[in-house]
Image (cartoon, rainbow, N blue to C red; front, side):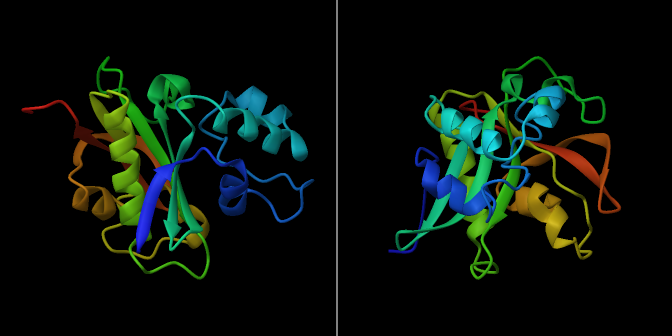
Length: 193
C-alpha cells in the first residue's frame, strides 16, 4: 500500500504525531505559528490539545497526515498564511498580497525517518492547498547547504526538500534557525504559470 497522505481530520492521529506523551506537558502541538503569540503563551497542558481538537474539526483542517500501511507516521502543518502568524512576522517577509498558503512544520515519527516521508508530506500539503484554490504555497526552510540540521530544528525542512518539490526561492528572510538562514520558498499553483 505504501505512503498515503490525507487531510488531518483525525484528532487522535494528530495527537500521535505532535502531541505529548503526558497530557499535562507543555509541548508545541504545532501551534507556535498557527495562533497569536499571546494566546500561545497563555495555553497550558491539556488546553493546547483541546484547541488542536477544535482546529482538526474545522474546514480546512490544520494540516495533513502521512500513513504507512494505515499507521500514522508524519504530519505537515499547512494553512492559509492569513490564518497564521506569518502574516505579520517581522523576520519572514510577505512577498506580495496573494492569498498564499504556508507550510511550516514537517514532522516524521521516530522509527519512520529516512524513508522519504517528508517528501510525501510536502506533496500532500501542496495538494491540499491546491484543492482549496490557493494561488501559491510557501515554506520557510533552512538553507543548510547540506550541513547537519539538529533534529529538534529540522521541522521547518530544508531548501533542498522544497526545491525537489518544485518550489523556488522567492526571498531571503531575517530568520535564522540552528545557525542556518531561513529562506522563503514558493510554488505557484495557478495554471499556466
